Length: 255
Length: 217
Image 1: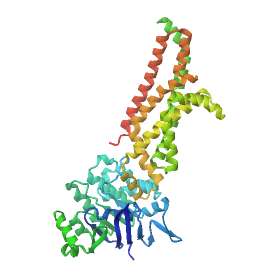
Image 2 (image 1 turned 180 degrees about the vertical axis):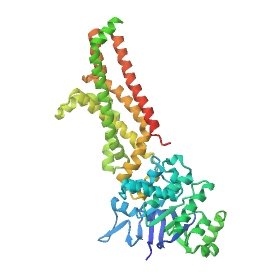
Image 3 (image 1 turned 120 degrees about the vertical axis):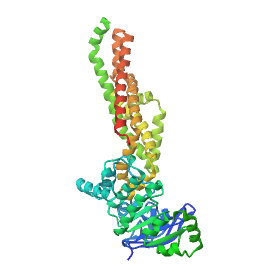
Image 4 (image 1 turned 60 degrees about the vertical axis):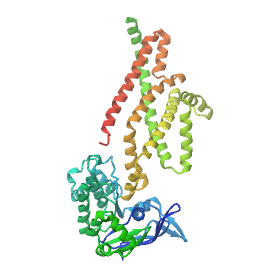
């Protein structure tokens, strides 16, 4: 059974239908990339999976549990804050704009969830966080505030913050889009290493070469639906739909 | 000069007492007002409307009323409600309410200036909203408002002079009593002004130190 199963996901912003029935499965240990032009619903899809957005129809199942909503007597209800928080902790998310906590050091950013969500003892949380900072190559920056770090370093701290919580699934939302070109490489190689270790990831990206290198499967979203999906070689080498051919043509600067 | 020093010696305890009352009432009002104002600011920013609207009305009303009227109301009107407060207590109540209304608005502004991504990031690691508030949002808001907060503190010390009208024995009231006895208007009001200046100068200085200490750089 797949770790993440999305069935018929529908999401409106007012009268605007952003997701028009999305079906997607991600297996344990699999890396799936989502590509598509802006406004196609990629980011919204990720935010629904992490329960940062409410959704209007369909179901998301994570590790066998339907998340976000319950059905009581046929009435669909959003879960309460505590239950949502517990379910969100099962997934980790890294954002385009890093969203590090600016008042906490790199170490503080990574330990906050360990202390306040996982209720780890302080010393254990510190050791665990330091081991993650080491894995992203920032052990020597543990005591720096985010404002004292470069964009690439900040994003690597954000990756450590998400991964230290030991999530079942990691969501990456255009994590290199806000970075200077020369800093993109260090972040992508961190993700590549995680992929090789078998971390399950769902990645929204504009980096076509990265999507091709790191993913087992690539999904092309268009107009709130999945238009095409398959192994990267197939999707990039032999696109079936005209929309994907057009998109890849426009994005060719990134390949 | 000799006469002034003589009168000063006689009045030394009265002045010291007045200074202590001024500092006590101002600081207590700042601390209590900030605590209350933080609750108000959180309510204004994130409360559902049945909480937000009453707070909004109270904050606007208090900010629209002159402090002097608040002070007189706390001293004279609360008696009709069966609450009998001493001059010090009514002074503290009115200054606290005044401070809370201002801090509420300041903290609301600071909270709303924090990017939405901070809440997302907190949620993403599994924090519930109350925890996000305590560990993510309020620490950032508080750092942001340090300069304004210090300013409000100095403002409260100055506002506390209004308490002299209800006979809270603070510095201005004591000075008025002393001047009423010896008629050395210039000397003692001058001294009073210098003392207020020194208190506020100390607050500003401490504030600058705190602002540097808590800067996000």
